[in-house]
Amino acid sequence: MIPPRFEYFAPSSIDEAVQILDRFGGEAKVLAGGQSLLPVMKLRLAEPRALVDINRIPDLAHIREDAKSLRIGATTRTNDLNDSELIHARYPILSDAAYEIADPLVRNMGTVGGNVSHGDPANDLPACMLALGAHFVVRSPTGTRTIPAKEFYQDTFVTALESNELLLEIEIPKARSGQGNAYVKLEKRIGDFPIVGVAANLVLTTKGTIESAGLALTAVGPTALKATEAERHLVGKAPEEAAFQRAAELAQEITSPVSDLRGPAEYKRAMVRVLALRALHRASARAHGGA
Amino acid sequence: MVLAEMPSAGDEETGPFVNVHVTVNGAPRSATVETRTLLVHFLRENLSLTGTHIGCDTTNCGACTILLDGKAVKSCTILAVQADGREVRTVEGLETDGKLHPIQEGFIEEHGLQCGFCTPGMMMCSVALLQKNPHPTEEQIRRAISGNLCRCTGYVNIVKAIQHAANQMAGPSGGGRP
Image (tube, rainbow over all chains, first blue to last red; front, side):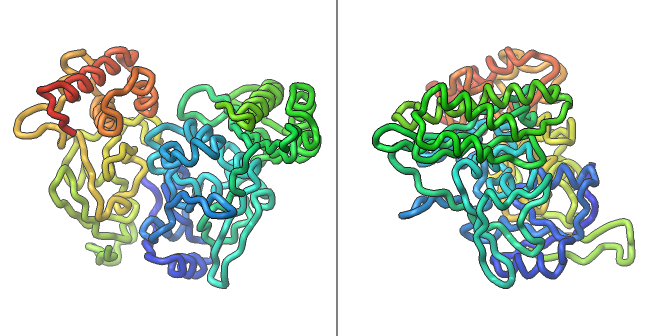
């Protein structure tokens, strides 16, 4: 299968890239790793008039930590999360997810920016970003704005990103002491989409109670879902089975999985509870200094 | 890169075109192709390097695996123009001066193939693994080739072939060859 014809642009600057996107008014698509875009173009599910290849723009691929944030550039490859000591040591939720996205070859091309901005509810990183309270830095011809992850995902393949906006960077609140997180995913085989995924992020007070909690779900709704009620329930509680059980049930309540080749809806809903418990326990263990 | 003139002006069925320059197995190669040309077609049809296979064409099977700047990727899901200015290594680049690469020796010695369709992709994936991790565990090998499907062997002999190559490359005669 060969994709439909398109005009190809390889801008060397962010400004040039957003000018081209603006000129095509929604008929251009950004090409980052292409691991989702090229397959949908081959299937004629997308037929953009133009592709804007952002891989020639300098400094869009980076992982760095500053005083307030972890910053991940849009064209950072998914495998770069796996290869980063910083990510393994301080943001293990991201290496958990990156280790199981698609397969190792796809992860060498596929980008973090593409995974979070594609809008596919079965992508793994959106739930991680919701649980971590990430923000997305985006540029249009008129300027730069920052979109919270929780406002970004609007519907299946529909995000807050305008057609003339380019995702530049993901900002994640800097890891603190007492913080632990994990991503747990159920999949039939490597390379398949997840049946269910759950992202959990806990910050504990010095007394050991939960100061803040992030919990988000993959592949069980029209978008990645932030389990706000479950998060609220966890705050102030001890990080123990009772609180986690209730949070997992609250998380189940917001799901609307569909029956498909990966399993019936009821099975998926049951797995949300199981995986939420596992993710919360693992996050708690890591917050206590475990692996 | 420079957008190229359409070779047949007015032809509605083709274009737009682009010039692509890629270093393939150490040699500079170039061609004028449609922007939508996939890297695997560029290699097979423009450069006649048919060792890179097309299997599923849907990013699943890994028969089209090549190295792009040293990393194993699926060339059916990359545009040729994305490789512009970069280095590609294909299965044809494994043998040097008439001597097989240790991974090729490994697949022969351990009977790592039956029909052979997946083999070029398997070997390129393995070469990337051994460059990054010269002493992989069996688990690491199985993880590394998890994006490459084989429908004949059950993978047992493929894993042995990769272990054979790792041992050869680590040994005194292997000489740390990439």
